[in-house]
Length: 480
Picture 1 (cartoon, one colour):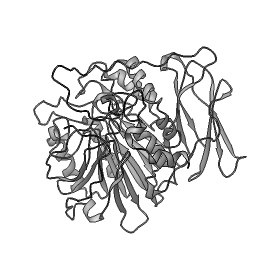
Picture 2 (tube, helix red, strand yellow):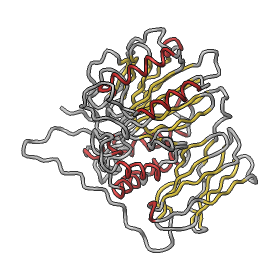
Picture 3 (cartoon, rainbow, N blue to C red):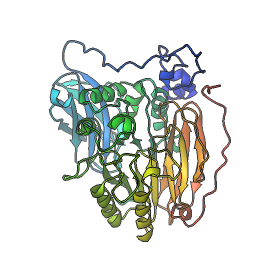
Picture 4 (cartoon, rainbow, N blue to C red):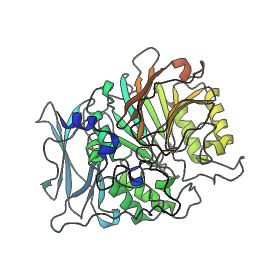
């Protein structure tokens, strides 16, 4: 039995470190209601493990970020300053090698660095090695990844997405372990080509720079995450808990520190605009364009009265989004925010910004834009919606956080609120009408639902009825 086959035979609770306990709240598994006198212990602040004396070594990473048809971005964190290199070797032509020096690893950037490797070939598999101070940091078998096809090329692409990693390092460990194993399998077993992290990527609940760094780094110690991140292009935006405190917004003091940490730890292709900082960006893979949006840096307070001055995205980001959409040639366009787009969500969502949302939706309909799919997270359950009877929305997660309960919602077409969850969006743009399929996966429970969505439904010409997938056995305990 291979390691991947072994991982997939384990229930989710078995993948949580024994020291945490399978029923520990910190592992993201609900526990029975305690007696009135009992108090839930406070979660202690995360601390990085001590640094072993000696030569600098790779403490976290390597982690892939943006991967295009000819470039790749790679993130690392070391224990101390040291020169480092990235070496890529073509899997089918070992003599074909690309090597680049990484930028300086210094205390001022938390000993993190992002290297840009250029001159790659499209749709080609490369083996990855990192050296630090001349010493190789990765043992054989080396991780590998495949570059994107040429921009504009039609074909099949599978995109994993989710949010909410949980308050401790162990919370999402079962999800990362299973996703890393499935990443190397075929589409029928849940493989995917890239991963979208849609917010609450840690729970520092602070804008303090050093606390942000501690939580980012600690999260990346998970063995499953390291395996997954070394082989998979990863793109990220933030939501409230990794931006600042719960339900934080653009008025939060120190938000500039959160952006500094975000840029240190995620190898995205861009961060906002020169005259408008933030975590938003766009990129194209094949003939699918991704619009990754910042729903916190310019956000008005949730409880402010809705009206012309209330905004989720801010004037400049919204103008940028419209400009990019208007000129996009992509057949499918994915719009991602940390907050849900749907109409009946929580008070920390687009529900509280309906004036801006509806005007934007009206604009897309007036422009007759086709192939729009909405993505989001935050809610600690996974749901799909047909928003305003027009737009498909996938709201993924949690990877590790304790589940919230689903409630009645007239726009929801499916949903699940047990365990660690993520969506895989399967797109095939080689057909006359792009084929769209969503899959809902659960750690330890496998595939919960697979549903084809017609092109007419994607473009609001046909109603989507609620699905009725069979419910598999529970993989985690529920509160009494």
